[in-house]
Length: 146
Image 1 (cartoon, helix red, strand yellow):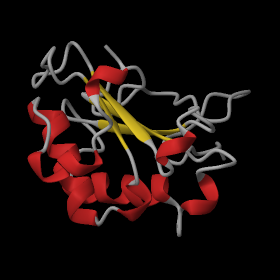
Image 2 (cartoon, one colour):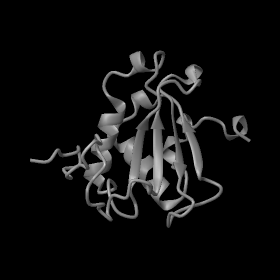
Image 3 (cartoon, one colour):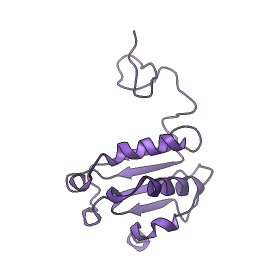
């Protein structure tokens, strides 16, 4: 009996999650966008739940967990943006269909307070290549990163 990874694929001997057969809907190196959620020592306690796990469920429910519009979630530990508490940032893949140079990077504060609808708005905006107007109050000012 072979070992299975969290996605249900058989795993190559000696690896924790490397699939024996690569699924073209879940290429490990491709995502239309990636959201990095700070769950470091200072931000973690402000989260009432598991933000990354909750976000992954929302993405799965939206159908953006595989294929060309895949959105990946990564826990980062500390991002050094403690003043924003509940911090996350996102990148669009330059090869994705919705890529926009103007919106390829975005940073967000107080994401621990976001509703599922607010996360959905971010995911849709990343896939389509725009910044969600409904989340403007949570955006970290662009000039910090220019």
